[in-house]
Length: 348
Image (cartoon, helix red, strand yellow):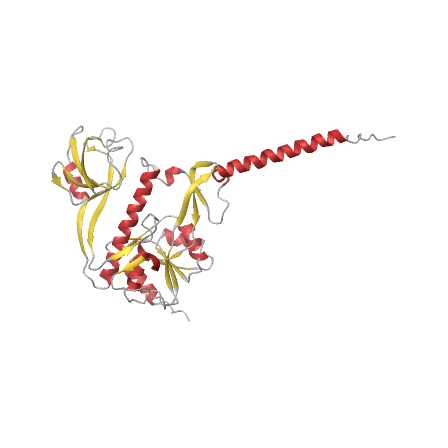
């Protein structure tokens, strides 16, 4: 009885195997490098550490309270194109989330237009925040309905490529427009194929654009042009309030801005604590939901704040999932936010 043994590999054969392995490793490494650098069509959301609000806000007659041990913070989300690697395997950084473009940019809107919309939303949120804060102090703030703001343009309809998000409709066929209801009233009953002249305010200039109506849906007799509208407000403040967000877009810092305006006008808002806040704020003082709550909660944690004010509802539910010990306070209004902060214990 005997057993056969394999002949030992020759040196040349060993060199061939090693070379093949090195080549395979090199190909894998090169593929990873390429996948990690080439952008995809998707977007990745990343946490950004919460920032102090005070340096951004300047209130006439107010002052930043440097003596306070507390501070107010706003949170944002860093958004960029995902790499091919992130598209295939997800973001590797803590709190990273990858989304397809349709979940980030509205239909029919280019990337450049989306950035313009975000900056316009930020500008509006600043004005509204100042108005809400000053009203809370009993100051007189006057507002005027200034037109119908185009929030979205539906692809495939007459308005596509003619009207733009952030356009403000101020007239239809020579009739003055103050509210979205005015638009609805003038469009009601228009036959399919009617020509409608829209006068819009765009980048400080007025422009008239004529469109033909089409059926709202198959078989419908209602004529539309394919736009979604919101209210444009002209706000007059009794004092000058300027807010410089350094190019950050979106409306989600409204609550934080409003709190800071009060702080600079002498109200002890932070009570010696580090307070982060997020939420879109409206002229009636209500606080609305925002996006990117996972990343914003992580950003608040990384700034080591004491509490995080967030819109009540799903935002608060999601924020608690990532709080990791950070106290989450849900709010539905500016008044409720002030009450919640007034009952906090000051820092010792």
